[in-house]
Length: 183
Image (cartoon, helix red, strand yellow):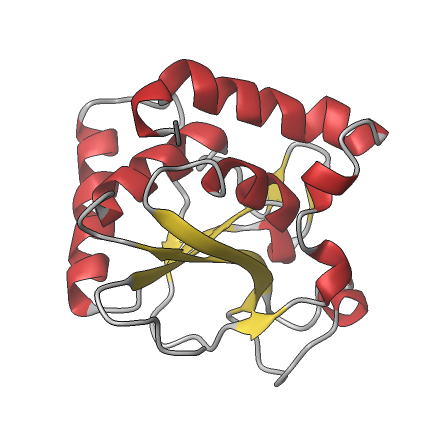
């Protein structure tokens, strides 16, 4: 992973299909860049086809470059836990396999502490009826996905998967986090 410019930070999150995450996080104030990719597996520089087999150990992830003066990491986690179901093990809706797991890849000890605290708060407050299965995976390398995955939802808004899976997540983002959206 590249080092972000001075004053910016990076977050790496896995919550199902990376197209879904990208469509939500690119709309947030303070987010300057998003990049779909892979993390958490054994193979260096994996391809989409290799990750899709579910045997590489990688998850589809989103690398988010953000300005912590405009949006806090905990705010990113709040959005993350709103737009996917962290109680589903190795799946999100129609997408099934370990590559679609719910995972947080902390980039700093502070991010790890925040992730653990947020999960603890969600559990304590019984926000979900089932236990949260989101994993915290330290030290994983981010591998960028092929460029044809970039801005997928923007380029294919009427594709059936986008209409059925991504559009409802974007609507949920708008309804629950309007205060965090770009003007």
